[in-house]
Each structure stands twice: as C-alpha cells, then as structure tokens.
Length: 271
DNA sequence: AGATGTCCCTGGAAGC
DNA sequence: TGCTTCCAGGGACATC
Image 1 (spheres, rainbow, N blue to C red):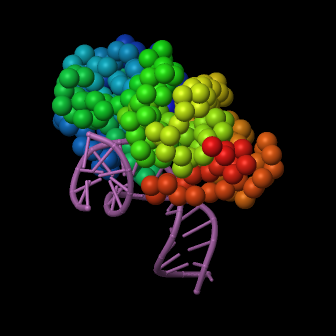
Image 2 (cartoon, rainbow, N blue to C red; image 1 turned 30 degrees about the vertical axis):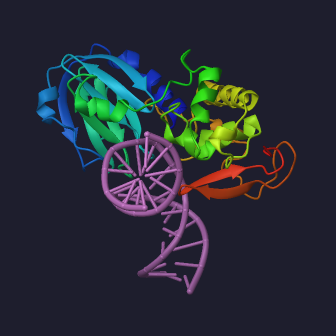
C-alpha cells in the first residue's frame, strides 16, 4: 500500500513530464472517498504546473487552484501519452496535452479533491493537521522526543496518527520500531530521549531506504511508469509472523493495535 | 483534548 | 465446487 516512499516515487515519475501540460478533458468513474468538489469541466483549459507532495497527498498545482490526490491503500497513478481504454477500476482521468494521468484504485479509498488554494477549507481539512515531513530538516530528534512526551498512546499508534510526523504507515512503522529496538506497545511518553533519537533515525533510514529502492510492492504498488519497488525483499518484520527474525532467529510475533496488524521481534524489541 | 472504535471498499484467501 | 466470512488498510469522523 502506498506510504510516503511510494507516493514520492510516484510523484517523481511524472512531475516533470506533466509540468506545463494543458488539461484537455476529465473522465470520472465510480465515486472515490470524497467528491471532487468542482465540476470536472472546470478543470479543462487549465495548465498543470508543479506536482508537490505533503504527507501521502500529491498536490497538482493548476492555474486556478489545485488537485489533491490520495492513493488510499490500493491506488496507483499512470501517466503516459496513450493509455489503454479505461478499466472498471480507473476512477479518475486527466487528459492533457502531454498525456493522460489516470488513477487506478480497486478499493476506492483514494481521493481526488479540488481546492481553490492551500487556504481553502477543503485543503485545510485534509492537510491542516499533518505533522512534519520526515525527510525534511524540520524533523528534529529533540522536537520529536518532546512531541512523544505529550502522548500516552502506544508509540506505534502515535506514529500512525500522522500528527507528529507524516508518511509513516503500517509497514514502515513496524520496520522503524524494529530498527530502533522498541516494542510497538510502548507508551510514547515513556520513551527516553536516547531512544526517541534512535527511533527518529530509524524512521528516516527506513523511509530513505524504501525511497532509494523505489517503494514497496507488498501489495500492488507501481510508479506512474509501471516500475515496481523492491522494499518487500527487505522487510525485517512486516508480514513475517512466525518466521525467524533475520537478526536473532526468534519467531516474529503479530499483534493488533487499533484494528491494525503490528509485527515485531520479541527478542530484538525489548524496551 | 486525547484515546479508541467505526466505517468506507474490493479482491483474494481461508473456512465450511 | 461453491458459498460465506474474514482480512488488508488511510484517515475522517463519532464517541467516550
């Protein structure tokens, strides 16, 4: 499922190619998570500028306003001069002078939302509560520790909440906690500063590594060019219940936290 | 206000 | 074989 690395890989795969394109047509399939928020025809004739990312949202900057794209858990984007005819799971399509951008999303947890600007209430609702970007300088170890001190929920759930740091989804939360040697059930406010610093480093390292490898293909991820990622070859704990820990050979355990599966090594993650 | 539970959706796997 | 049930998960929202 697309987490920050996958979304960033997707962005990089088409941002330069779509920049400067003019919107020629819009096709809409079944409803996605939220309504588009404008008439599809209102987008026609506008030019696409830059494509940026905030957390797991892609921001397509247009002449007037922007499109917020979210891939949900099963979404992927394609961008090519010519695409095959739309399939049953292709729910949004932006036809431009440089090619067609298409959202393929079988489970329809994804979204395409139009906002007039970043100050638009619709944009603020989606982006306003997001935490800092983990791969930017604003993600500071000491501030991270201070933020964790304010929270009594388990560290895994605090990471997933995304209001301290964005982009860490279910896969990379388990992986980062393994790398940091921390038990996922540990209360966030009980994490010492050295451990918080370690977790900070682990989050950055896990995300950067996944990004360098082209994202995860644990489900059905591929970039807008159709390239698949390789992170799955690398997972230390995610999806490995009962298998031997790659470090100490102890069987990996699976638990549920907040309706989500969590994987950890009971030996390597003792604190 | 922070923590927790619910819901949205479909395809694939598991169970009977 | 063919049905039903369960599960995956991001994140807004409701509830405590």
